[in-house]
Structure formats: C-alpha cells, structure tokens
Amino acid sequence: MIDKLKQFVIQKIFSVIDLYADHKKKIVLTKFKSCGVDVTIDEPTCIKDPDKITIGSHVYINAFCHFWGFGGITIGDNVMIASHCALTSITHSKYTKLFNEQNVLGPIIIEDNVWIGSHVVILPGVTIGRNSIIGAGAIVNKDVAPNSIYVGVPARKIESLNHPDK
Ligand SMILES: CC(C)(COP(=O)(O)OP(=O)(O)OC[C@H]1O[C@@H](n2cnc3c(N)ncnc32)[C@H](O)[C@@H]1OP(=O)(O)O)[C@@H](O)C(=O)NCCC(=O)NCCS
Image (cartoon, rainbow, N blue to C red; front, side):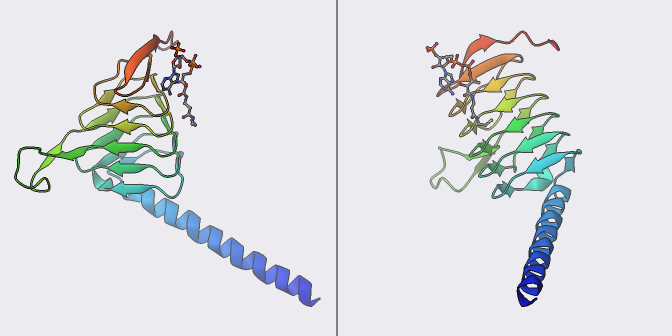
C-alpha cells in the first residue's frame, strides 16, 4: 500500500515537472519576433535577441545550438537544424582598438526546406537558398544557392539537387 502511494506521488511530481517544461518551451516561442506552428527547439539551446528572430512553421532545432539574433535571423518553413549549430548574425570590427567596441551586423536568412547538419557555423550576412543541404561541420561564409548540397570549411557546393519544387 505504502509503495503504491509512493509510486503515485512520484508520478504526480514528474507530471508536474513535465507540465512546467512544456510551459517553459511555449514561453520561449512567444519571445520571437514571429513564430509559426509546429516549432520544436530542443534544450539546451541558447538564443540571444529572440525579438530579432523570425521562425516559420514545421521547424525543428536540435539541442546545443546557439543563435546570436542581434543582426536578424529569418528561418523559413520546414527547416531542420541539427545539434551544435551556431547562427551568428553579429560579429565585431577588426579595425577598432578594442574588438568589443563595435558590432558588425549581417542578417542570416534560411529559406524554406533547408536541412543543416550537425556542428555547422553560419556567419553574418549569409542566405541559404531553399531546398538546400549543409553538410555536418561546414562553415558557411557565403550565400548558398537553392537546391544544392554544400560541405566543408569554407562551405563549397558539391552537388545540385533535382528538387521537385525547383
Ligand atoms: C552532406 C550530406 C547530406 C551528404 O550526403 P551524401 O550525398 O550521401 O554524401 P556522400 O557520402 O556521397 O559524400 C559525397 C562527397 O562529399 C563529402 N562529404 C560528405 N559529407 C561531408 C561533410 N559533412 N563534410 C565534408 N565533406 C563531406 C564526401 O567525403 C564525398 O567526397 P568524395 O566524393 O571526395 O569522396 C551528409 O554527408 C551530411 O553531412 N549529413 C548530415 C548529418 C548530420 O549532421 N546529421 C545530424 C542529424 S540531421
């Protein structure tokens, strides 16, 4: 009897913790400039300046990503971002006496149906064209053409995709 009671209490505690975690995730989504439906952001993920970040619908962002949103980040519909990715819409001037004196901003745009592999870094000012794939570990410092696969450091095109939506 005591064991059943203990089990019941433990289950209740866990369901309250789950409810709290769900609630926290929903609050995070309301902080964006705008956010569509069916958006999942796994924890832990670090998001700076969410009010400058726009997210479409059916977007999956895996854990351990870091978004620096200050320069503006736009993520389209049906985008998948694997774990450990960094989206950096802000950098610093190399010409000032102290490197922290001046921010340099460049918006990042990820168009619809883009798949970004794990450990990718996207630098300020980059647009990733729709239906494209960025291979794991790439550093993307220039615009990515639509319907293409890019890999490497710096990212370079290795394949054109014959996407039905081309
Ligand atoms: C980019 C990717 C989709 C390409 O897959 P693919 O078309 O099957 O690629 P292949 O294995 O045929 O490789 C094609 C060439 O690109 C190279 N390549 C593939 N992925 C690469 C990567 N991430 N970085 C550098 N080079 C890569 C291969 O070495 C090969 O080069 P070669 O022709 O000189 O031998 C895949 O390699 C990848 O990175 N997937 C992401 C995995 C991931 O992050 N998963 C997390 C959950 S989503």
